[in-house]
Length: 116
Image 1 (cartoon, helix red, strand yellow):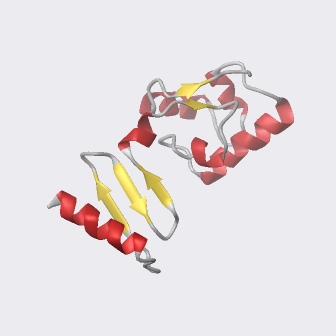
Image 2 (spheres, helix red, strand yellow):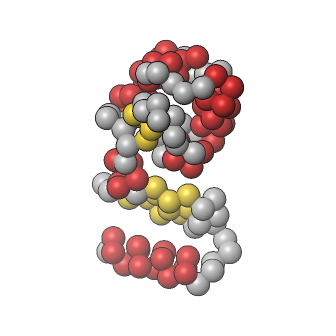
């Protein structure tokens, strides 16, 4: 049944369905929203994100970060240079120490800091 739903959804997406389509499968942690062009899969949720190299869409794959806070991270990085460690995210407007701790808990091992 799950595969039939996925096939049906992909058929609608490929056919250019213009409405808002969403499908979520909590067992596989996947989310597809055609209207917003967001596709999050289990693989995406396990991919490491370097906060010094990531673009907006890569930052948004982190559980707990939306578009506004992701943009705030990019703005901070542009104004202040690269992060030296993950805890420096607390210096970003709208992100405090508690949120950094939640991000790390919800994204274990995914948040990287490389200063390339």
